[in-house]
View 1 (tube, rainbow, N blue to C red):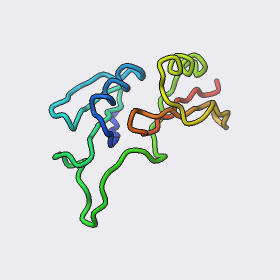
View 2: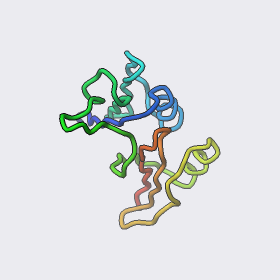
View 3: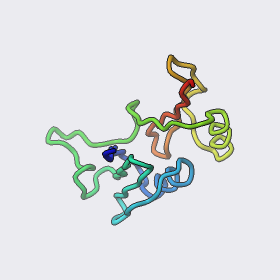
View 4: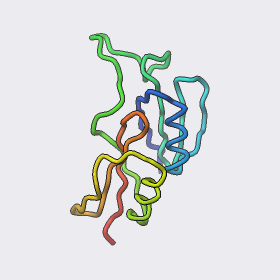
Length: 126
């Protein structure tokens, strides 16, 4: 399968690395500068960029808009046991946007990384 890349703008690259690697099973591939890191989880490559850095992904646009963390677009990580995962993350002090929601295809919940970027945790109905 092809690698899928997602870029998140984060306020603190080191805090984001600790969050994604420590809580969500990512591994650090590279961290060549304070304002950029590349993480992997399976076929998902997560690019972390601090706003206003020298890299292309953190630069503003010609009309003056600047990248910033947050919003509602997100990637989804499938988990085997959503209740157990939620309990573990709550105990670790992870920030949640909502409670578990029962949807059409499964159950889900949204967590925030240290910069306020959402990640959806999803347990499909089997």
